[in-house]
Length: 613
Image 1 (tube, rainbow, N blue to C red):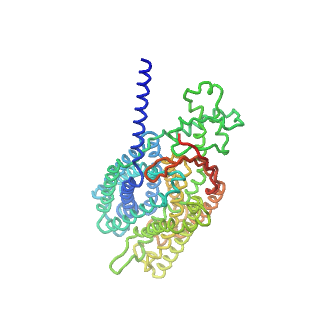
Image 2: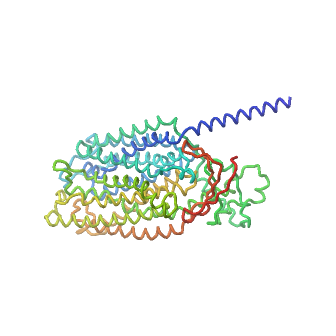
Image 3: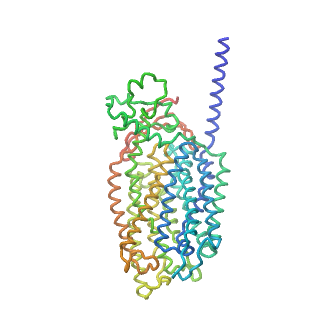
């Protein structure tokens, strides 16, 4: 009988192992290149809708709702800031319990509700004030009409939070994102992601903006609404192809647990042998799919959270109280976030610098000669095409020409490190803002020459293409700074916190926009009534170039801060495991790679062979 029971038990165990193996095999067959078209189709349609909705929104607020320029500009930056705060909520939901797939689906539906609502508000006449072509003594939108606008914007901001926090990490889930996996591919996921986003933005800036200016806001907002619906359908249809990673629990809770445990054990003394600090492979299994973090010598006071006290060591089988004892890996997760924060913060003032420039640039372009041909003139909002085209061309040239050329000298697979890439972007952006100031001086000189300074609706005889250089420089800056910033946060964050890292990237935009709103409000309030830098109606009598010089100065200070942070930064110490089997692009192997505190990001690797368990 005992033999039969033993055989029966062994049979059940073998059956369970086979079921688990088949489940893993089925999961491993998902993902890879074949899943990417469905994700990118969703994101292209989503970006098309977002760009078509946002690109010309300053015109909708000033021309359709008759809002003053500064109030409209601040509304846009506040909306953009809120849209960039909500990814924190989206990341929390995705990583805690919902997972990235369902978070994206639910968020897309909420976003669609917002687009439908604002489209209806643009069609129904009693939801916006009467037209005012002269832009003089216009009836502004009532409080009830503004509340309708704010509710619509809130829904879209809430929806974009779930989408933006999860799309990039969900795309990366389909591939092997370890250092070995990245180097085995001849293309960069982040570069091509931004290229596809640029393609969608370009389509929106040419098609949707033209429709908004010539066919009305009903169609102009309706088309992005339809595009968003298509994106949801494309994403759901691709679900059988997707590799879905289960959420590993709230990373925010884990970080708090480490801090609480460290505070409780603040009187304890660290052991001389750091190998005695608490480690639990089974406990950390769900959050170390690509490898565990090694112990680092920074922020040693946090290591006290991993000290094993005598009473905690008595029963090694019992599960630990994570509010009193944390593993080394979880302590290092918190250290990673702390190390990233100074570099992350440097992006805030960059966003601040550009937060209101788009709004003011559109108003500048509206006063200039916009004729591309004798019978056709470009829309002011479509000037962003030059930004997008430069970014798209820059991404291709960066990957195909710049990286192979620089790699010969640096011997770095990526050509230059993320930190170096970001630094170049900061410098280019300062040049872009300085050029914008010089163009504004030129524009007003021409207006003064033809006595048009007092006519806000006059078309000044200066080509709008004088503004092309500043747009191109901003696009080039994005190739280096924006892509590099996201890649840095994604690469240096713990693998279980990649949605949170993307949310941090969005949070940079949020804080930057709110700081931008504060600066614009202060400049508008204290720059005088007679020669206000940022007047509400007549930009010709303003001092917009002073504002651009102020922004340039802020960016120079920020660049100095960034260089200091980059020089002091220490890369995360990670033991990578080859053969994670994420889709078809993965090269099978059994070698572990340990990258220990690479200060320059391209140091030598410590390699040690180990058998797969």
